[in-house]
Amino acid sequence: MKLDSLYQEIILDHYRNPHHKGLREPFDAEVHHVNPTCGDEVTLRVKVADSAGEHDQPVIEDVSYDSMGCSISQASVSVMTDLVVGRSLDEATRAYDEFLALMQSKGQLEPDEDVLEDAVAFAGVSQYPARIKCALLGWMAWKDATVRALAADDGSAPDGPTADQPSAHRPTADDIEETA
Amino acid sequence: MTLSRELSAARTLSVSPLDIERVRKDFPILERHVHGDKPLVYLDNAATSQKPRQVLDALDAYYTAHNANVHRGIHVLAEEATALYEGARDKVATFINAADRAEVIFTKNSTEALNLAANVIAWAGQPRGIGPGDNVVITEMEHHSNIVPWQLVTQRTAATLSWFGLTDDGRLDLDDIDSVITERTKVVSFVLVSNILGTVNPHEAIIRRAREVGALVVVDASQAAPHMPLDVQALGADLVAFTGHKMCGPTGIGVLWGRQELLEELPPFMGGGEMIEMVTMQSSTYAGLPHKFEAGTPPIAQAVGLGAAVDYLSELGMGNIAAHEHVITTYALEQLQQVEGLRIIGPKTATDRGAAVSFALADIHPHDVGQVLDELGIAVRVGHHCARPVCQRFGVPATTRASFYLYSSPAEVDALVGGLEHVKRFFGVAS
Image 1 (cartoon, each protein chain N blue to C red):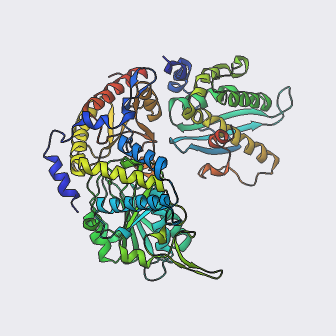
Image 2: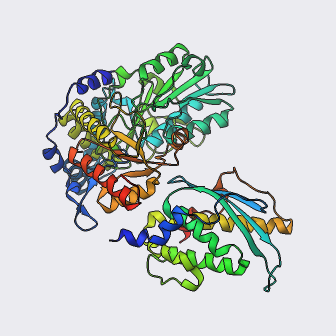
Image 3: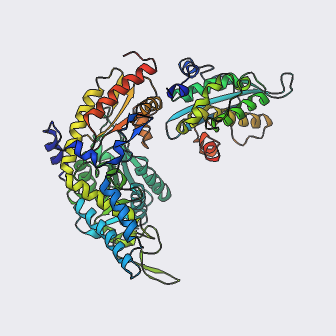
């Protein structure tokens, strides 16, 4: 059944038992992203530790979130946290890029399991255009929050945490779909 | 309005007055199979209706034999196209019992009709126009297209926007009607039938109060015109909006009906060809009704298609259609409420209720419900249905919505109920 390629057991597991869920202190940036067509929402915080580790570059120290939405969006944010928390900015960004490419692949890309780990289970989602935004919601929120956290670190952030602002001015899953 | 009377008549019926098997044969798409061998069960009629052969044929005939621009040109095709376009206006005027055909303005859809209404009222100047300190009243169950235009005009004019809240069973809370609609209120705009809750609103009470304070009344009839008799004179509003594609017509055509003397008083909306009388480089004078509000080449084929749709609906009889939908909705509400873990969002009985039924199923997200139903060939809508405040009011991020129409059958209700049990099994929810 085609549906099983969408709802892989790994996805349902993360949906039922999400990792890293809940909003935690401390954090450097907080964002609120929505999927306007379906009502999926995520509030996500990122804590970045600078210049730690052997690579001498920022490390994603923590990602915490509160969210509601469909199994795809909820599982995706859970899987995403596994792939970025405790990783260097480079590693996390690589996972982000790989996941984005997978979502835009229309089922034509063989995902790299070394990079994406559990997120390979989302390969089937790329064949359901209406669900791609769901899978990208958490990732877009993470990228937005991380950019803000790094800017705040530089002291160059024009605005701080933006929990209650509409997400229209920031990159969202919508923008990605339009440019895909 | 005849609406209440027609619905009362419908309530006494327990069998549909329509021959559904015959009606379904008029809609070629209903014979489709999806995902291989699954017969299509189309329950997304509040989003858009399917189109009967009669409408498809009218569109085809128009483009095949009569296509030209309207109201200009003296050749045969131009005259035929104009006659067809204006003929569609006559049909719509009769369909809604307008006092005059000039009161029927063709728009792109309900959204454009409501934006037109909001803007020309705001621009009208005293005493009609909206200015600082004035007030506009809407309701919490509006579609975004009857919220955002009023937010825009009240923000631009420093007016205030207020609204009626909802009761727990999905009806308007009119307890404080006299303090919501006040002497400051210039416009009251409300939906006749909710697209998400299915509620049929008590228009008499709202219009009576609006009249007491001299406010204009705008009605969003997008979910009413396709489903029940609509008599704009009996309704008693000033402006009424609806759209063609939800009533068997094509996309790209909507209607704004307005009382003639009001439309004459209000300023134009968009400027361009068609809506003018005389243009100089300094200024222009405007065409009479309805052309004053129809700038540019209109949606000609779409209007012709809407005319054919109105003929089709009239032949079946809007009272019969309302009665059929009442039977189906009654059955659907009964059957759905026997599904364990299902919660109806909106009125739980078919009294004063349209054929859109929103619900939550256990804690399974509507997106997941809709996805699994789709795999079974069952098309429903999931999300906030362009009525996010309603979802917030009922504490849900989104709903699953099944919405019925003149061709919906009890077997399709049964398929939905069976599908929902399958959804629960798929996501491991015990029955």
